[in-house]
Structure formats: structure tokens, C-alpha cells
Amino acid sequence: MLVAGVDLGGTAVNYTLLNDREEFLIEGMCEYPARSTEGPAICLGQIAEGLKVAVQRAGVSLADVAVVGLDTPGPASATGVLSARGSTNFVHADWAGFDICGNLAKVLGKPAVYLNDANAAALWGHFALFGTGAGTTSISCIVGTGHGGGIIMDGVVIKGRKGFGGELGHVLIPYHMIPGIEGLKPECNCGRIGDLESLCSLTSIRRWLLPYFLLQYPDHELGKIDDSHKAAYRVRGLAEKGDEMCRKIFSVQARALGLFFDQMINTFDPDALIVGGGAVETSPEFQRWFIDEIRTGMPVQREEQADIPIHVMPNGDTAGARGAALEALKLARG
Image 1: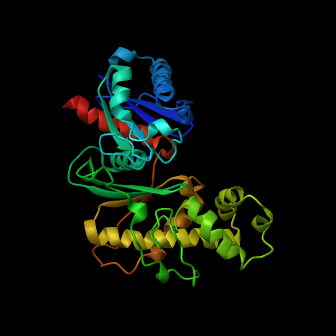
Image 2: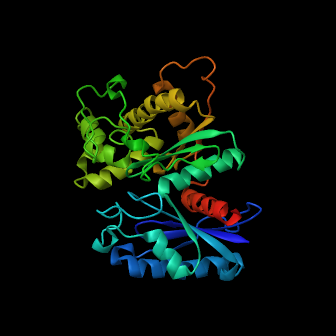
Image 3: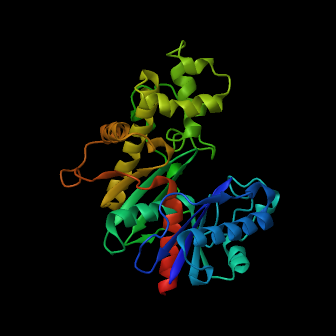
């Protein structure tokens, strides 16, 4: 028995296959064009075609796939009905209110289950650390263009009443405690001031942190780039190389995570904290520095909680597809 994991992004679909011995049959990326901008009908057809390619690559048959796990960007319900305003990354008007999971099941002729992309990545991160055993809790933060997250308790994703469980990026933090950003009032796209995403995302770098720090470094090379998106995208690479201003920007992001994780420790007393996304798709040296900065940003913990581990998300590029496959395996097992 096999299940498939399908990670649908704005421009590409990533696939994996998982057997009932919890072994992944595809290592690394297995991508196919998504064409999500052309609407649901074309995009679902693309997913089906790409799944055929994936099973051929794994040397198995499509008939062997019992259940398909799907993850996409939100907002969406727990069952995979996209918001009435559509998905964040799917601009075609027909995505609004679309039941993407139910309709994919019809196209494939197979049962399907749904997670948002951050919850799927969080499920994989938890499984990589703890397996499918019960009794463990993890909190994952996925730092990308926005800020996703996931809470896993006893191996189960906390989806919430409307599917918005784990929207960790919109939790408010006491950002005034972060040194070096005096006078900054970071506003999130959701309208909140001082939530985690407003300080810890690529969007936060573009809108708030890079303009703020360029005032202190007026001769910096990034100040000479007219395109704010391109300038923000370069911050991580320069920070990894040791650029002083860019390291300060990433220090702010790490310390914002530290304040947030402190809240999670006092709420859930978890077994592990996990950080994923583009912010930590870097060298091991930079990852260690970033995690040290997270710990520096955390208020003093109780002695019993101070040893909580902070991990970098393993297999970051394929985490979503792997988590979706794990969710599918639960359904296949009944």
C-alpha cells in the first residue's frame, strides 16, 4: 500500500510517495509545473499528470496509491475549502471558495486529505524527530515570504475549529523588548502591529527592517537597489557572509522568534521547537548562529525548561509533501 504527498505551490507541485512501513520512495525534489494562475481546472489536471510522473520515477503503479495527501497555501478550511477571497498565492478568481481537496479526489478517483502547507511541514518535522509515537509535542515556525507554523500534539496536527490552527505568524509578541528597533511599529499584512510575521518574514524585511536599518547604513550596497523585493531577497545571503547590517536584521528576526517561543513554552511545555523555511536554508554555521540568537532573545526559562531543543527543519524543500503524505497514511490505515 502506498500514499502520495502533494505539495501545491504557486508555480510548482512537489511530490513524494510513502509506503506503510513509513519509508519514502522519492528522495529529494520531484517537481511538476503547477499552472495555478490559470485556474482550478487546469491546475488539478497538472497535479494528476505530475502524479503519474512521480509514480513512474518511484517505479510503482498509480493503482497502488490508496490515498493522496494535499497541502497548499492558505487560508483554507480544515477540509481544504479555500477562503472566499481565494488562496494567498493563487490569483485566479475561480479559486475563491473552491473545494480543492474534494475536487482533487474526484479528478484522481482516490480519497484525499488536506493540510495547509505550514501544518504539513510541521507534521514532517515532528515525525523526523519523534516518529509516529504518541506523547510528544512540537512547535514549528516556517519563515518564508510570510510566516506559517504548526502545532503537533501526540502526532496530530492542531487544525482548529475553522482550519486556522497554527497560524502562529499572527500571534502578537512584545516586540518592544527587542533591542535596536526603537521607534519601529511593524504592521503585518493582516493589520496587526507587532505580530510575529511583521518582524520575522521576507515581507517584514522588505517593508520594515531593511528600510529601518538602511537609515543607519546609508552607504550600504542594498540601498542602491531600486527594487525593494530584490533588495530584501539578498539580505539572507549577505547575512550568511557576515554583513553587519544584514546580520542585525536577522538578529531581530531571531529574537522575535525567541519571544514567541517563550510564549509557546509556557503554553504547551513542548518537547521541541523547530524552525524551517527560507530563513534557515543556509550553511550549518549560519544556522547555529541563528539558533543562538533565538535563545538570546528568549526570556530566562525555568531551570526545568531551559534545555528545550531548537531544531532546523530537516529536508526543508520536501517537508510539505512529506507531511501531506504522513497525513494520508493516517487515513489509509483507518
